[in-house]
Length: 344
Ligand SMILES: C[S@@+](CC[C@H](N)C(=O)[O-])C[C@H]1O[C@@H](n2cnc3c(N)ncnc32)[C@H](O)[C@@H]1O
Image 1 (cartoon, rainbow, N blue to C red):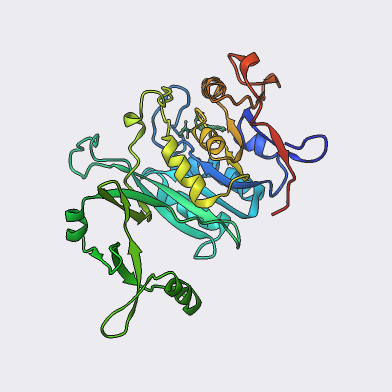
Image 2: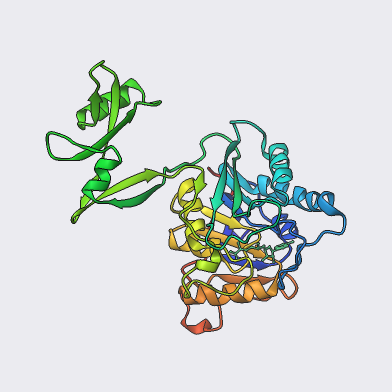
């Protein structure tokens, strides 16, 4: 939505159909989109129904214009993460190829969110299903990618068993092939003491363990299988809001920190109880949320108020707007601001 000065307003939650609302946004006004739509599950979730009289064709016909609008509102350097599962993920990937473009210019990853086998239900005749997929596409060149790491604590004995060695200065290290490091990068690493030459003269890059108390910290590069984030059933009580399809904050933080920068505008056009909005706020991003469900928006009001973020709430039916409730007076308005559309 444009403001009077032509800037795109952030810090707003719209209770509206996302297609209608997106059509009011200017082109190229957001940096990162997280979209967690109905999955074509055939179920009713209480606050929203996910059943499609015309089957998959009906579902795809619902998704396509929304993805086209999302493509339009994304900046050229922006990315979209589309959260899906086995029900329609195969069709959504084809659709994204059509809307965003196929191949390495646009398709970045199909991230497997393996949310755990602990609660995996046995299914007769087949393996239990225990992952979702996040399809990551970038719109154009210059997209953002920040490597993510997980930390693992090792004893010295575990480090030794995992192949780590101690160098002449007493630091624990392992090595890996140089991969796609350029000669300049290798020279820079050499100056930092991070190059190891094998007896046959091969260059390998050293990775160190950081001591922490009596333990050693191993940082592992996060790949395209995320197994360290449990599903919403295992969320801490204070994070659980009772929204039927709530996603974990840690998942949204991972998405936002992987493909975005502080100050970016994050859009969630199916924002449910506001997980992406809360994660965007916590990581210093601006945000805009849309959801058609009054129950979702009511929860979001409470969630944002608890975070001390007012934002602005606009209801398509009543055009009612106002800061987050129910404690309107106590809330600060750190969420709301505006941003020029179209710049990159
Ligand atoms: C899977 S849930 C999103 C859950 C969310 N990621 C969270 O963590 O709470 C899908 C959401 O899409 C919303 N939705 C369905 N159709 C919509 C539409 N046409 N416009 C906007 N939101 C819609 C539903 O109300 C529901 O909240």
